[in-house]
Length: 463
Image (cartoon, rainbow, N blue to C red; front, side, top):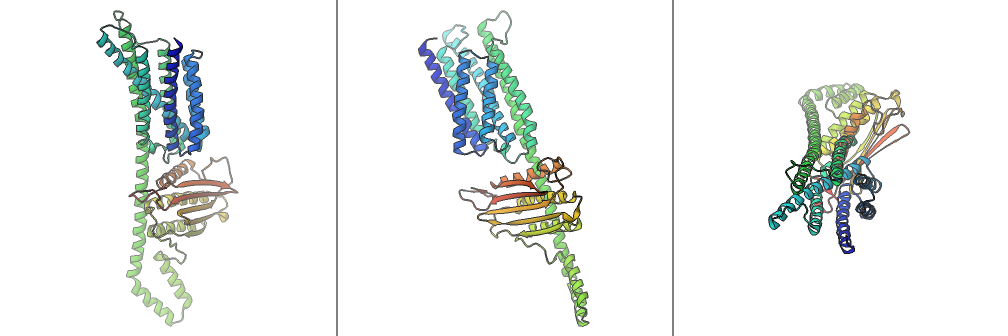
């Protein structure tokens, strides 16, 4: 190859790598909530490393399978190091980028090569097995453009994949996707070593090239379909499961509200008789009996003196129920909860968050050996322009329990609860934080209350 041709190929390759790097940096920054500086550092390091690996491959100093392994490892490693707030989620983002670019490039290159061979044969009338130097360069550029356009188009549909998923969900999906990447690299290695799908002996190199590119095109198409079904299918299953859980929460809290109103209605219905009885006790100066009678009336109507008044009837009923459960189990309860009157957070989402947190706290305290030290402290209030929830509860001493289990008997179910909390908070661009120290588990949830840029109809805030 002449020096001029090599310079042109190198320039085309560098431009394609630069477009690839910019597109990937934007994708990762968007879905991993990275900053501009993180995206810049990732882009610079990835471009240099990828260009070096491509240069070595072009010089044929390394085999293709080693080049593929190094480039995948470089992308995954840099993603985890630069954007590594959540290792499983960052690995999923890197794997999805490899899947999208690799399979689409394989499909696009094979399809365009087949199309180029057919057009060349039709225009020249000769059975040429090559599209020429400039044809190959054009196919390379078009392949890169198609792959990067696909990443841009799939970016929005993939948003739910990175929103509020549990670590186990990412782990279970990573295994089959990595298998697809391995098979894809194996097929590319075979193609780079001249292993093609051949037709019968009566056909020449031109026909064999068509069969080979056609087979790669079919393989890439089937692999893309399999990867799409896996990712979007599992995402849909997860969303359906979360919607079912939210529906169950909603039914539970409406039943709780109905029970609360029924108790109030019974109390109001019997109020005349209660007043007669109280009046008789007062006339006879039976003050202690009257006080006991009033206390029993309050308990019957759910109107205990220490009843929560948060500003939300539904949340009041929820906290009242959880307080009764704590009292029945001998758990010390302390609650300070207030929400602003103009709160844009839907009551069902607020109940999902608070209900899951308190369910976890109650189960953690129930599993304690020393019931006298069991406690739950709840704070819900406004901090600047955010609604802040913090719940502290006692727990059993660390006994090799997984982080996030909060001393519960079934840490897997606790993880599901944390997933529900994180998913509900993510709908409002909120954040969740957990901490364990001195046999106390603390969970904090911060939810923005104001919309500074985008307004949405479902009451969530985008800031």
